[in-house]
Amino acid sequence: MVALLKIDALCKSFGGVTATDDVSLTVEAGEIHAIIGPNGAGKTTLVAQLCGALKPDSGTVTFKGANITNRAAHARARLGITRSFQITSLVMSMSVLDNVALAVQAQDGHSFRFLKPARKIKHLRDEAMESLRMVGLRRRANDLTSELSHGEHRQMEIAIALASRAQLMLLDEPMAGLGPEESGNLVTFLKTLKGERTILLIEHDMDAVFALADRISVLVYGRIIATGTPDEIRSNDDVRHAYLGEE
Amino acid sequence: MGRLSAIGWVTLVFMLALAILPPIFMWTGQPFYVDLTTRLVVLAIAAVGLNILLGFGGLVSFGHAAFIGIGAYAVGIPAYHATWGGMDFIASYNGFFQLALALAASALFALVTGAIALRTKGVYFLMITMAFGQMAYYFFLSLDIYGGDDGLTIDVRSELPLISLDNPLTLYLVAYVSLVVAMFIKHTLVNSRFGMVLQGAKGNNERMVTLGFNTYKYQLVAYVISGSIAGYAGFLLGNFTTFISPDMLDWTRSGELMFMVILGGASTVLGPVLGSSIFILIEEVLKGVMGWFDGLLEPLIGRELGLEVYWHLPFGLMLIFVVLFVRGGLMGLLKRRGK
Image (tube, rainbow over all chains, first blue to last red; front, side):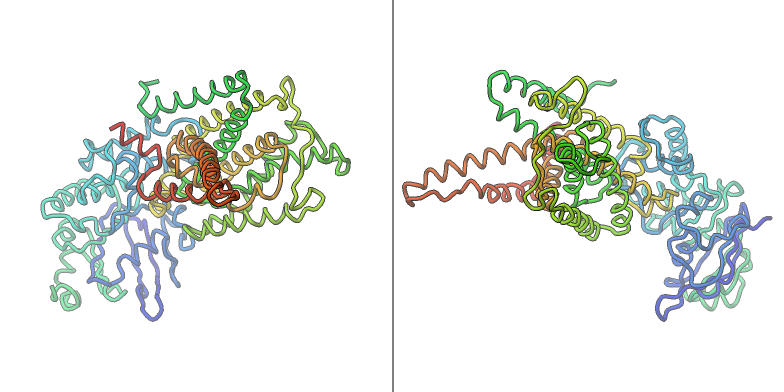
């Protein structure tokens, strides 16, 4: 397997708090790599540095062999990294389909195109519709985003990640706030993506993580204390002590 | 073309009324109303330009009067030199030259100030655009050669082939056609891919950046387009008033423009036009009412109070009412009625 994403000795602190402490990690192409860790372990801070929203103090991020540590967020997205947000982040004033179509549009060359109505460009709409169909939101396509439920918003986040055709999907707690049935459906769906997409999954829901992940890294107080297959992590003493044991 | 929506019908009827009424005013010998509608239409063009930023970009610019002023001075300064000599490279009565100058100058001003202002967000953006507007205000104020504080009279209007802007009705029709074109440009723009990015960034900038859009660039282009449209309105306004002064660039003018957009309803095509129409009409009506009130009080107090000047007072109260109770402006009201 090839390392799609390589994180090397990444550090980030806020004042006296070290949120990311010498994190090194590789994500192989095609795998679902989960990052688990207790609240405040620095998971979202890590995602923010990977997608470019935060700048690390030191260390490097390499994507497809290129050093992207200093690239802007929009440039990374163009290279093929997409993220979903832990706290739903959508354009509420637009329709569901518009939101997803923008993700397709983002990968379809520049958007300094002023004449043709965007809603009439067939391939943008079709691809967006296909993503919505995959997550089961097709019938809500023309509804206003703000009218959808929380669960549906989470599905939209996934649809947008799919539509952006990103090679690497950073999913920041996609199950957050979902009921057992909804997260079950989402796990089933993410399983179907296995092998097709590379996913870095940040998740609190342990059942989901162990059902999905090829490999798991455990983050505690900004440090990676272990990386391995689900079985290895289950039997790792440090992890049991630091994290699983406390649950 | 599908069937027209209710809003579409209102737009069509309103624009038809604007096309038909001034010629009727003209032929029935009421030039005052032709002047009124001309001013209304010219300001509506500027409001349409501002609305691209405010309504669809979510960028509240408080300095758009500067663009109107720049456009107006682009008529006045060349005409001044053509009359009185000096600065030969710029001296001209040619309308196309003046128009090109107006567009280029306002686009350049938008590019430079926008590049800086767009690095800020929200209320800071509002303050910095206002500061740039005031900068332009003091710049023209300090130009003594063009009258400084006293302003400058334009002796000769822009010269165009075939038509003469000296004819009020011709000037009106030019302004009207310009407004229709501006509305069409805006409609096309906001529905294009570019417009979708702009609206997306208004709703959720972080999401748009994460998708791969450099929203700063898109907003800057929108700022330049918006400023140029306001500059074009300034070109017409200079030809309409034939008098320009720094007062055109004052921040209160920018505020009025903003009120027009909010009053009519941002994020609609007709909104700013409706807003500026109502704004100008109410201004006239309130002046009349205040004057009538003054006349009523005169025998009681024994002198005129000159209340006409204070038409802003009831107007301000009305605006507060609109902002508080009529969400989405007049167009918002229409939409809710339509449902």
